[in-house]
Image (cartoon, rainbow, N blue to C red; front, side):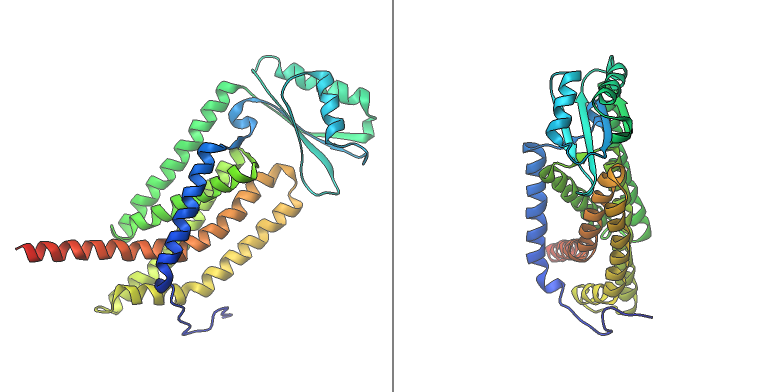
Length: 310
């Protein structure tokens, strides 16, 4: 079996836990501040409106050209965003507004593009129309789905392991979600239903990675009774490090291919996955295990205090 990390390697992960804890919580705090200050660039899935994905074969067409054409159809707030490879002249055109009239607007846009460009000079690749009320319902459904997933993880880990492990798994997962949302807040990439799907995928991926480490910790606790937990955790992380890095690297390779070749429709999903895999791998090493140690330390101190008070 190929081992990326040599056997008997013993990096002192727990020795640097306070430093990484500081980094993690500062990053999470920054993400929360960004979310409330800048907010997310919600797609029409959540805000309601019309979104059209158009690809032009004429290299002379640019964002301003597209914006000028759209203003001939409808004045007001029009967002034109170029995306995909630099070689592809592809744009997302977004109009926010009430559901009434959006279907007719999409027809008007198609007619205007047809009058401005030859048929072989452009291609309408996707048209999405969502009403504001539906958008709000979808937003709440996305929030509930994330909360239910976290609750399910808490129950599952508590049953499979014990109360010391369950909070650590959930806190690490919440940390991952917060960081991803912070990245979307600062980059201003669209936050869509595809992004929510990616977050749910990352929740499962991150927990699976964490549980591999937890399994090794639990096995070692049973075999090495009397050994300090900090040593057991450190050894468990080192033993699973090769597997963790290899699995994350292979998964990331697939996601990078999606980013490069998946096109605009998969960009939000792929980007969220890429960030989530990196953050999830980090949290399974530097966030979840130290929290287990901290909870165990608090429990032992409480037991010692109760014993001394008797």
